[in-house]
View (tube, one colour):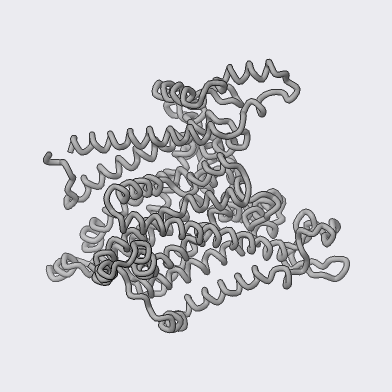
Length: 293
Length: 325
């Protein structure tokens, strides 16, 4: 049975975004968020972590306030007089970066394991898939919590935790596709040509397994970002030196009960928009690339 | 059937054993609780005495063996911080978590299935599109942030609901319950809603997909040809068929509700197992962490077992391997 979708030509994919207004809007939103995050040092009012640029007299100002020297804090300031908009832009960099890096690494790891399991078969396959099953039967947040409790804090630690909770999804997806692909004639042809296993797996089988992987990976970036934010909020994620959106929300939490809503609601809104844009784009990709997933 | 259940039980015990070893090795490989518990000015002799009293001077495999032996007799060590048996701490907090998770589950079911059915029956209508947009929002909203916003709106701005705690509880058969008093319900509503949102979005999607799939099946067309009313088709024929996957997913998701309660409980200061876990991680109270993990693993294994058995009972099409062996 042929379950793998034929990869849509690139222009057809672009055209499909033009047809679907919601997906197009999400794509534009996502692109703007990424550009804003990358250009944060250029477009933001101040470097929120350069203490020389902060004015303690501007602390806890509501959105739209003006500073003594005429700057406008569009989204207010936190308890150290830091412009929230700048902090959010810098936070986005960290959140997106951690989400992307962990997803790419998890993808590479899960893909290799999945390909190995699917192509080799036998007890290797059985063993690897048992591990995948075992891990997927526990919620990601629980595994991440335990890992971080063991490893401690740090950017590298949270990336490790995010990779650990993600790789199994890719391994399972790729393995299923590799099982289907390896029975196809082009693989037989490649075997007849005496190509190495390495070449057959990575040059012939892998490209045919990619569409569903891309879909899973898109959605997983959103998951990774949300999970990182949650863990940072719980105080187990990013260290204070790398203030991601989750950490900003957590810092603002203490001021929430005294009515200073802007410190945690705006970073949350940025987080929500990012995750939603990724999810909508992922949804659309799934419809186009692999309707059956 | 009995053979099948026995075999599943055997697998469950194996998983439990593997997980206990992993948990123990992981948790006991980090930090030194003696540093936290003892006065920094303590001399070497006192440190050694405390280490010995906690059994931390023995080799790891021996510690694990002692731990496993004790675990089987229901003793998972004493909390370093409060010197109370860890398992008692967990069990004491468990009803609050289960109450929260169950309430969230009921909320998700009561809202999610009708909304999903509606969206599945009229997929092109504006209301269905609004429901689906809402479900995407539900998937995208970070749970902890929704919790904060709920507190902001309902507690800080409107002042309708209390932001934290469990409120007045009633003791029934030695267990404290919140949902039996008005005050308790007021405290329960926000955390449960917060916890339910993600599952609600999931249920809407599942029900909608199931409904759309079922409505084009032959049995629906046949029922229509027979003159069965649309109401009856949906209630009896469609609902029965889509409930099978839903029950399975719900069963499995209940475990994740209990895990996610860690976040919700921390925000709303709900005195459940999850908050206990975070507090224990912060002070490296290893016996409590281990006990929590083992209790959670046991719950998961049990839930998976029940779901598997229920699934075969619900769906007569499922054949069990080894049933006739």
